[in-house]
Image 1 (cartoon, rainbow, N blue to C red):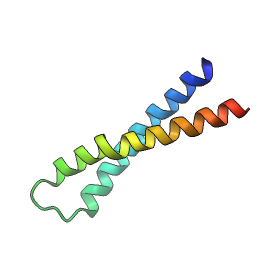
Image 2: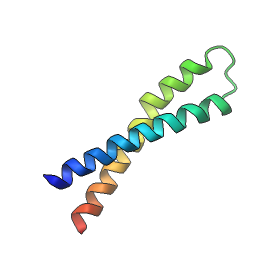
Image 3: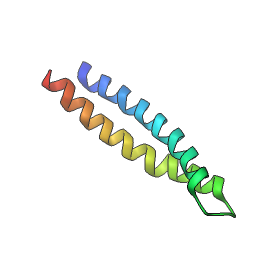
Image 4: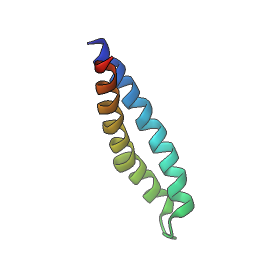
Length: 67
């Protein structure tokens, strides 16, 4: 159970980091001129954050379980 909760904590941290970094990257790189902030917010919160959290959870769980 300890491994699961530690992996979950790592996944939450990865979500936050990916969402913040993704937001700033999208605002800098997007060519959308009408609603760039909305695009950045939605993409960071609903695409980049969850993908990073899932990958981080799986990697952390497998790594911690192997040790």
